[in-house]
Amino acid sequence: MNDDRKRIAILIAKIINDTNLVKNLSPDSMEFKIVVQKLGYLIQRIGGIDYGFKFGWLSRGPYSRGLQNYYHYVAQYLNTAYINSLSEVEAAAVQRVENLLIDVKNVLGSMNYYVLELVASLVMLCSDVYPTPDDVVEELTRRKNVSSDMAKQILSVVKQYGICI
Image (tube, rainbow, N blue to C red; front, side, top):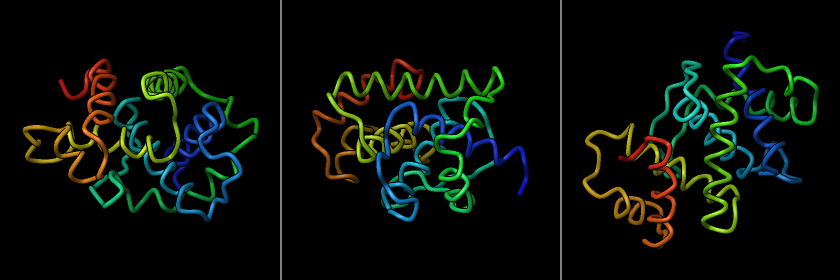
């Protein structure tokens, strides 16, 4: 495996540890895989580090076939010293993604794998789906069967990060 690409597993593991997103979840569980996929997408999109993973839209939002080969690395790095060995650029990317998740949690009152899925999906609808939907709130509501109010609250936070403006 390319060592540069493996760095994303360390960043994902750090965010998982810092935000407690997958407490007691098996690395084989669907929830764990969703978290890895969505954080990988947000690290590239919001964090600004391009590890070369290509993401497309699947039923659960952003998904990279290449990133599926990294689930076990993320699990391996959880609670290890590796997650503290970040470059300045990596630390800034992690902080930006964590800040976004904290801001969403503050607005919604919770953060879990499903809310993370909604955040990543909304970001993708605004920036990586062509043509960009005229109304991303309506599109997210339709695709994810989420309330319009919840989608609007997530959008208000995402806009603060320069996405969906």
